[in-house]
Image 1 (tube, one colour):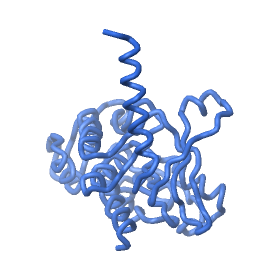
Image 2 (cartoon, rainbow, N blue to C red):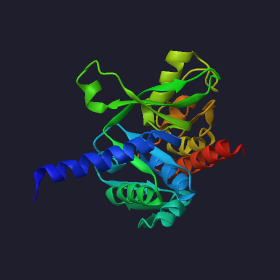
Image 3 (cartoon, rainbow, N blue to C red):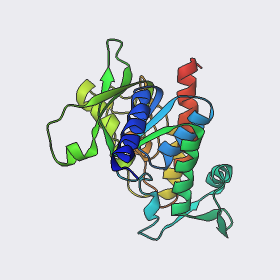
Length: 259
């Protein structure tokens, strides 16, 4: 085995995929459950989709389950999406289904990649691109290690027709838009309203309604949707996250086709 050949194989294959991803239909920031589901349904429909995750692993808070018990709960609607992915569930009681957190997130990730989505971990979205029409037209990227080390290193960019903010509780992309462009989001305040305290039933109910085009070219999904629109958090029940991701994929596809 030749060490240089191994290194070249890694470098050449990665750079080929990365350069191809610099011009996509949809760019997703955040590889939690909603981002992965969005990527899966888009790629499955033939939409050129790329996802950027700043952490070493994908999954957001899902792998930790509830308080590091790696089990997660779904309601009936969420279970139906898990069935689509082939994730095993067990009935706890009527209307409540338990799944293994690690099986769930690894299956979502694998399915998205196999469907054709490109996923890049350890990359942070540090800004968005906006041109003269005022519409978001892509994302600005840097290695996560650059920001962690507080290095002054200029970023690279990836163009896309639609951007999805699936960055979770921090709703980072929407905060960037407000900081750079002003309070022009389609919310009650024009800014990020902020996540409410725990209320699982209300949070699950509203997360799908909150999955909207919150700014021209920008969709908000998953916990970022509840944070931006001001709805509660819901803890270790994840059905709404999957439903939000599926809706975000439909919205993005409609924006691409003018529907």
